[in-house]
Length: 169
Image (cartoon, rainbow, N blue to C red):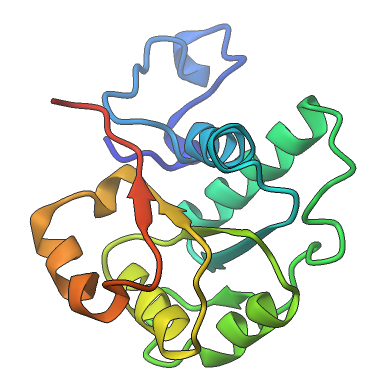
C-alpha cells in the first residue's frame, strides 16, 4: 500500500475500522513529522517552508509537519508561512510552481519540505534552483531513487542539497 493516511487507521479498534491493516511503506503523516524533526535536529532550522501538492500525499505530509511542530511545542516556525495559501499549495503534476516557490523564498526560510511525489517534486526543486534558493530541502522516500535524483542533480549542483527519507537499504 502507499503511504496515504486514508489507508492507515491509527486508533482503529475493529477489523472494519482497519485494525489489521499494516502499512508496508512509511505513512506520509509520519514522514511530515520526520521532516520537521530532521530540519530542526540536523539543520537547526528556525523557519521552515513547506511546498506541498494538493493530493493526499502532499496534504498528509503537511498534516504530519504541523503535528510535529505542535508536539515539540514550537511556536510554529511555519506560523508566518502557514496556514498555507494557494501559492504554497501546488497541483499534483503542475508544470508551473513559480508562485509557490517565490512565496517560500520571500519568507526567508532556512529549510524547505517538499511534500510532493515523483511527478511534481522535480519541478519544485528545479524552480527553487532557478530562483536562486540555497537552503537545504527534504522530500519523501518515494523520491529517493536514481531516476528522480538524476532529473534534478544538474540543476541543484553547487546550490543546495535535497535530502530524502530512506526506509530500505
